[in-house]
Amino acid sequence: MAEPASQRQDHDDTATDDFADADTVLELDGVTKAYGTETAVTDVSLDVQDGELLTLLGPSGCGKTTTLRMLAGLERPTEGSIELGGKTVAGPETFVAAEDRGVGIIFQDFALFPHLSVEENVAFGLSDWDDDATSERVAEMLDLVDMPDMGDRSVDQLSGGQQQRVAVARSLAPEPDILLLDEPFSNLDVRLRVEMREEVRRILKEAGVTAVSVTHDQEEALSISDRVAVLNDGRIEQVGDPEGVFEHPESRFVASFLGQAAFLSARVGSDTVDTAIGSYDRTLLKGLTDGYQGAMVDVLVRPDDLRAVPATSDSGNGTIVKRQYTGPSFIYHVELDNGDVVRCLHNHAEDMGVGEPVTVDLVSDHSLAWYPTE
Ligand code: ADP
Ligand code: MG
Image (spheres, rainbow, N blue to C red):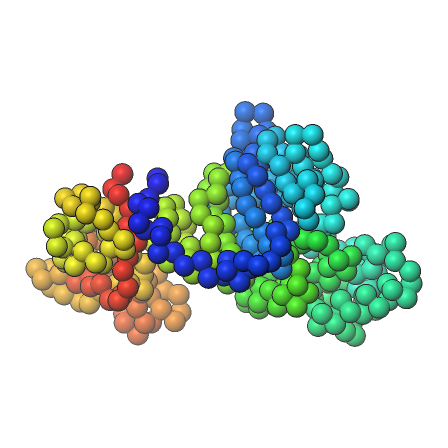
């Protein structure tokens, strides 16, 4: 659903500004991909600037891989065009093959050659280079990925993280104009995933390469990207820097997909906003205009916006219906007296039980995003 324009205007696109003077390396214009009657990607338009890392983020089946395959030249768009480095590589009359696009790809499973050494893997795309230039480039790439002395190793002796470093080195060696990464961390265990996503960001930034990654993992997208494009059912819902999309989600879908969102139903009064946990000044709602007086809206609340304290069933405003223990913290799901279910973030020492009556309070000191009730 389209959201009030006023809510969009205070969106400060800081990370985009970092690339404001950079050249556009990649441009998608109205790109659509249909398979028979099924449309996987619909009317996607997007620019990626030189040196930028943009992530396509969305749930499984939303069209991320299809988009990446069209960028790579592995699929042809049904409609629209793609420009890479100022040249049309896909359009109504044009289709440049994958091998002629200057694109590097890192797949989920790294796709290394197990019978070749680290060095041979990294040199794989350099068959046109002479021997000296190849050795020099391979050494440079192994330095970049912090594996300077491991060129002789066999790939199957490497850890998952090392294999990923080799995959990155191999894809960057031929100096691609753009690097594409499809769910690059999904085959690593959780601990390594966090380490490697920071490391891969460092490597891409040091190499200065322009990159498009795709993932369904919102934390990964927010932590590694300069900009995030949120995809829903083949369409882009919002593009912006990570803070922008997280703090100012323009649609209910984006709000729900990023972070553990819940919604408080609220009635907008002349001076106040009334909810099941209390009445607040109207300024609580970001960019609220006069037209909404008397309307019902859904207010976005994330776990860190709320706190629950034990109460009696008479004095409280809700009941704990679920507790999620994550180690350092609890997230309590509370059903409020009006039926809204919200989540509250608590320190692991604050141990409350399912069925306990509580009073939920708003503890955040910032204004909140909201959506007209559907
Ligand atoms: P994601 O990578 O976001 O999980 P995909 O791009 O793989 O999503 O798929 C998007 C949609 O397109 C899905 O509904 C999928 O079934 C469909 N799709 C993808 N590839 C094909 C294909 N070759 N033929 C038919 N449908 C496809
Ligand atoms: Mg996919």
